[in-house]
Amino acid sequence: MEETDRDRIWSDIQALNQWYRYTGTQAGEQAAAYIRRQLTSCGIPVEWVQYPCYRSLPGEAYLELLGSEGRIPLTPYVYSGTAEGLEGEMIFDVDSLRTDFPQKDMAARLARLSGKLVLTYDNSYPFAIAASRAGVRGILHIWTADLAHHGSIGGVWGSPGTDDLHRYPNLPFAEILRSDGEALLERLQKGPVSGRLTVRMENDIRTSSMPIAWIPGESEDFVLVSGHYDGWYEGITDNACANASMLELARLLWKHRDCLKRSVALAWWSGHSDGKYAGSTYYYDTHFEKLYAHCTAHINMDIAGCATSDLVAFNTAGVEGAEHAMAWMREFNDQPPLPPIPMDRFADQTFWGAHVPFAIMPRFNRRDLGDGIFYWWHTAEDTLDKVDLDVLYRDHCVIGRLACEFAASERLPFDLDGFITQLESRLEHLEAGLHRTFSLEPVFDCLPAVRTCAARLSAAYAADPELERLMVSFAGELARLAYTSCSPYEQSPANDRAQLPGLSRALGCTPENCTEAYFLALCTDFLRQRNRVAGQLHRLVEHCETRLTLWQLEKQRRKDTQ
Image (cartoon, rainbow, N blue to C red):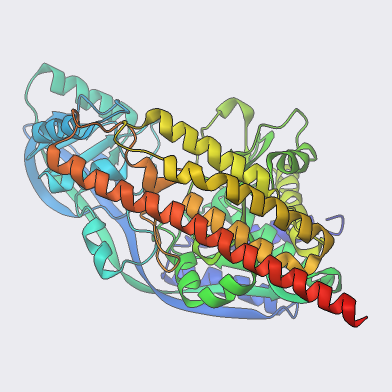
């Protein structure tokens, strides 16, 4: 890190600032080509991945109030449907600030909104898709500030399969500035209002390119470092700073590649903001066997270099353990670091199914923002003046430190017992919020055997680093079960974000607050998800015990031969 060329990072940021790097556009392709040229000029091998992306790029949008002059500007959400002079009565969604919505209450809410143009504070995908199916004509979401901001109502992770096509709301959905939204709400409270809505979109399929750099180490096993190069407008802190940092990291790793025990792949994704992680998902689908057989960790860099940032925190899968994560963060925080947060499934967290156990996304934020993000996120204000080069150097060092830790260490920092404890804690939280109909007992019954097997495996790995692939596979399957609800070859729905998402869908649901048919369907889903988790845990223990026995026999054979 001491060899980092800050001037070169800044030069790369300024170069990327030339383009609005939207997926599949001429400017986006020019940015990808620039990244490739910078890598190849250093002699770094680059894979040039091209793919078809179902991309959604917002266009012009506005609302006209019937009987009034002028247009209220709007910002469409990614995957919004289109409208051209769509007229309708407007209504305020009085329930939009509620966070708990049992199925019957949601049905009643949607019945009130059906056939209307809706003003709301709810911009979630579940609301958008339910509103679309209930016959809502269009939705205007009131943003938190007077700054045009881009959001998404995409419910499909990556490119859709045939069974995913029904997950797109196809509903005009746009954001309205806070002051305009509150003024409109005031008018609605005084009496009926009708409007005319226009939303224009480019929802189409574009060919997009992605450069993937390869830094060879002693082993084919590799660490994946990634960040998206597409963004909104200039998109400087999100994500040109990360793109430039990764370029410099690639140069440094290439120079010192003889020190690497494992290889490093650095990927610049497209289709992140305007394609719901389409780029990383395409790479996953087309490189599945390579990822499954050799990828040990995924480090994601998204939003960096933000002026006034005074906090380095971690979203992490948790396989390395909380104490190890805290030790990393202490190096980069002037104050005591915040505890690591279990990974929320977002920002190209695409790789769970391939048994990639370690997933870390550092958050470079400000302590006084809490869970918030810098105000210029996803807006035209994300410009060069928002960058602090000293902060960016810190963020660059965090990513470099992590990459080197995983690529050069003799042993990977597994804390299987800590991760199992984290999983058990999540199960206990679920149990407390589930109706008595939903029992987690079969999953709890599996955990002692999983913990015993993990302890045996960890002790064996401490004695013999050749067991690393078995450790990766064991921890990777635990992580997959914790963060997905589907097979390894598919992607869970984009709104499945919490740990154990398949089991979490039943939280708060009872026979009283759901229709009979819906509750039956929920019970069916829960049983299948419970069988999936418990069954795979049983298979995991059986497989691991068999492999450990074979390892012990081979160890004894070698000893006898000597």
